[in-house]
Structures are given as structure tokens and as C-alpha cells.
Length: 327
Image (cartoon, rainbow, N blue to C red):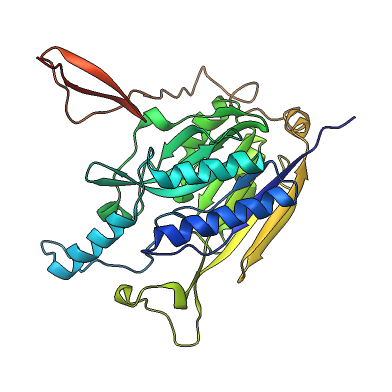
């Protein structure tokens, strides 16, 4: 008898500069996924905190403006902390729906923002986080760089889950590191809505012999705050048009792509299909050539400050932070 797992990919609009509204929207969508029997729900990149497409923050080489700094402050205030009330609310919704959830958030840590994918288990606990290693282009102005300590695949009730965010999927060595951890459910939260994205996802499914679940945002012109001044033609109503999809380990399209509207894609998958697909391709096994090619991954957290005078370790997501011992 085949054991099937029902999975969901959510394609929806976020709420820029209104995190409470984004949380309510995420909770409602999680409830809908649970009502339809899904055990895993994947949300887009930056769904909580928002993706400020087209925002230049009045920043130029050698010059910033007070207006741009104020816009960054608003974006910063919309971000969430991993131990904050927003993620606790999402955890409660995951627990109530007995869902495993992968969702993109803008994470605030100190005075730096990260584009982060959070994996929440059906008990409501955070199982894993992944901070985007390489923000693309102007994203580097607003987001920090993740390090190797969050390149993880985690066991969940639905299988081994990992997340690779948007254009990280064009980093071959990162993909290879995920395959080496025996990932089964390859989650790709994104805001790339180009037609070229689906071939990329299909290639990854075939290359890694994995189920790929890609979730992209919808971003309507009416949802973009006026101060971001989106440069869209007058007759164009969407700044992001989606393109979400679910793909099998042999590159078969199981659901999607969905364009130009909000919606939830569902598919029933058999994890044993991954084993079947590995008959003739295992890029980190019998199809590899370690005598020629080897990958070394540094998974140590990189901290900007280390206190050497009798430090006391403080547990923290994504690494160990240290502080001076009390007198």
C-alpha cells in the first residue's frame, strides 16, 4: 500500500508595512490548508515583513537621504524576531492544524534584517531556520548575509524538509549541500515570477531527485504603499504575478504553475518516488565523482563579537552569542 502525503503551496499577497495583517492572512491560509487535509504548507519568500519590490530607499552610490532612512525604519519595524509574538501565533496555528509550515519572514536580529525561511512543526515549535546566504542585487542594502550555520535539512512528520530561497537556487554548491543531507521536500520560497522560474525548479527536481515545492507571492499594485512608488505601466495591476508549482522527482508537474491570481496548490505525493528516481541518478552518491570533485561546507556560525573575558554562552537561533559573566 502506498503512503501518500498531501502538500500545499500557498500563492498569496503579503501586507507591506502591516505585519499584524500579514499574520492574520497567514493564519487564515494555514487554516484553509488544514481543512483541505494538507500536512505541509509552503508560503512565499518574505511573506511576513513583505518584499518591497521597486523600493530604492533613495540610496545611491555615495549618497543616502533622510526619506530613504525613514522608509528603512518602517520596513525594519515590520520585521519579526524569532522569539516574538508573531511567530508564536503562527506556531499556534500550525499546532491547531497539525501542519508543518515553511514560511518566508523578514527577521530582525539586532539592527540587521535577514530574509529567512522558518520551518514550524505540527507541535507549533520552530524546527529550523534558514537565512538567505546571498541577497540579490539591491536586496543587499536591506538584508544581511546568512552563514553556513543555517544550511540545514530537518526531519518532520512529512519527511526531510529544507528551504532554499529565491535566487539561492542558482547556487549549485548550495543545492549540492541540500542533496547531501538527503532532502526529500525541497521548498523554494521565492518572488521570482518570470516564466524562466519553472524550468529552474524542474531542473532541480531532476538533478536532486526531490519533490520541489515552489511558492511565489502575488503583489497587487493596490497593495503597494504609495511611498514605494512602484514603476508599473498604468494598465499593469500586478507587480508580482506568482508562478507557484509542485514538481515530482522525475520532473513531472504535479500542480501549477499558477499565474496572475491568488490560490493554493495541492498535490498528493509519494516519498517513495524519490527512491525510485534514484535508480539512475544520485548526484551525491553513485553519480558523483569524489575522486575529482569535493565540496567543503563551513557550518560554523559567524559572530561579529566574541567576548574572551570569562564568557557565558547564551543560546540563540543560528549560533551561540556570548556575554560577560556577571560579577
